[in-house]
Image (tube, rainbow, N blue to C red; front, side):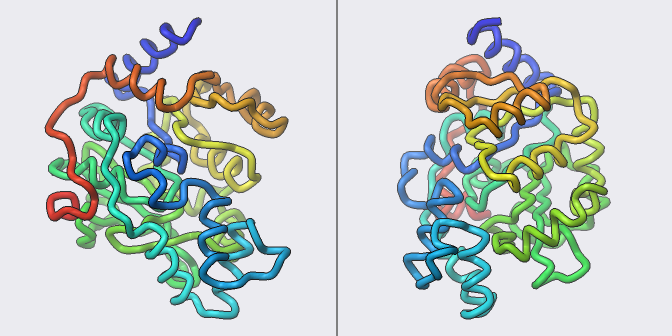
Length: 294
């Protein structure tokens, strides 16, 4: 199949609810204010290192940098820096809005800390949120269910919501949950093979569905493990938009998981997919606006 055929197949599967978007930090490049917030593990590690001097061995490594700050400056300092990193308001891109408007997609996974997609979802009343939480702050609890405005929600009530936004590493809003330090990741990765940190509803909604990886890289072991475990017992064929030549580990990961690589720049893919899907609804406001925060 060529790119046009892949795009048509992806658009059709999204409309039918058979394809689950899995959004990584690279999705931020589609937003007009893309430079305002960190858009990669390395960029976020650099931001933390610009605020607190970390040892050379931790510099550039997100988990290690965050762990050093947590150990020597307290968890509250780390959480405050994460809030600062993702505080600038961002305008959802046309692709964010198009994905948020799809009525048949039952689940969207977002593996980054920004608030862009929640802003794009403003106005929908059939949405619930699931965020991963740190064991250092919520010992014995792996995730938190909530309304889009942060109001508490029973996990069982999410089954009634047409769309669930699942953020395994947390997000800056509405409750500012962050899994970011080495300790955070170790706790999750220790249990993830038996699926304990992954909500049952996510496990149910992924069944027999495929994933569309957008703005994702699989260069780190943590990224690969999380994607593998979230995708367990789903369909056998998936897609990833990845214009850059994959590393050896990435290429092996794509092959092992039946992931078809779409070799288009994300911005070009987004433009072509949105044209096929059609945009529904009025443009969302930046996340700092009253309507997006509602």
